[in-house]
Image (cartoon, rainbow, N blue to C red; front, side, top):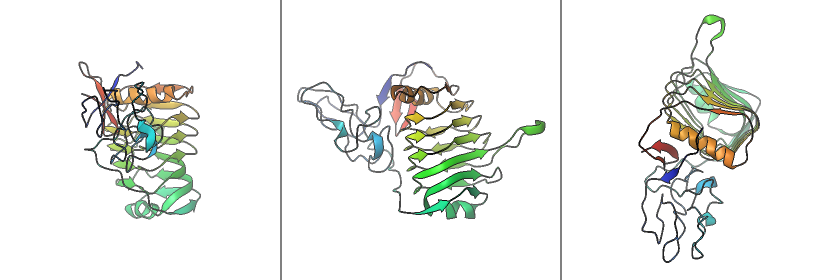
Length: 272
């Protein structure tokens, strides 16, 4: 996909300092840190500006610039936090689940909130029609939510939303396929997927957060998710390539718009 020019919304500045959500540029007095401790990190997402995206760009060449990475690390592509954006939930200390975990009911989804580590794959039953919200999950062996189209019969997954806002690593495959009811998937802090990343043919998916993703071990397939902004997909690909990821990538589709600019708004690329 073509390179994307990124601007940051949810803030403004005068060239001398940076408020929450600003792109940091050197003014006459040098730029200050952009939104250290903003409520939601830029490309890193997450609570209190945490992870990879807190702070301003930190890359300004002005000698007077203060590094925007002072409070939250280097900050993926250097965008600041967004002061008007809702902060992500904090991860609470949870237990470790050994083995795979099936989510087939609301009770299963509620019980899974107790875990901060799952040493197996979370599999979502096609019949599960709720939201899988796991704010304390930090590490998981794999994620599968899928329907099927075998024997000429289409069976779609019914899940409505997947929210894992503090998950950092998937040690296996992240696979979401034929989830025709899925509206959002929030993986804002995932930095690495060790095997495959496959998000394909989820026709109602309109919000996908992969703000901090920089490494995928095998192939990347994010296609035929027709309600995603093409601009947001371009950002995901640009971040992976900038980090040196050389695996096979097919990131395409989405809503194509003209006469607008790709802006980072509360961690998501939007065409504005």
